[in-house]
Image (cartoon, rainbow, N blue to C red; front, side):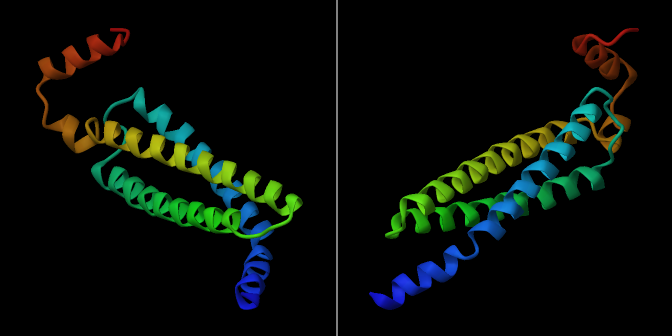
Length: 139
């Protein structure tokens, strides 16, 4: 039991570092999401390779976020002080935000894949016109 408490104290020493890392990750994901939102308005601006890279990178980010969430659950399950519990709860809220943002960016990447350059080039003019009309683009 003493070993487990010692391990918890040691791993809790990483709480500030992990919290800072997750905060930076949330900021980065939000910035990338904003950039991709701009691409949504212009089909064909991204190529298949770029969209695939977005999916790969943020798929890894989603896996990392799950690992961070598990760490938070482990800390919360331990006998920690009320101050530590508050810090762990803040950490868990940040991780949840990272998970929401990552899920949103992956969904956006799936949407953007439908309008990637290579996909747009395979469509006929009439298909592109109809899609443009349905989006409400100015003609």
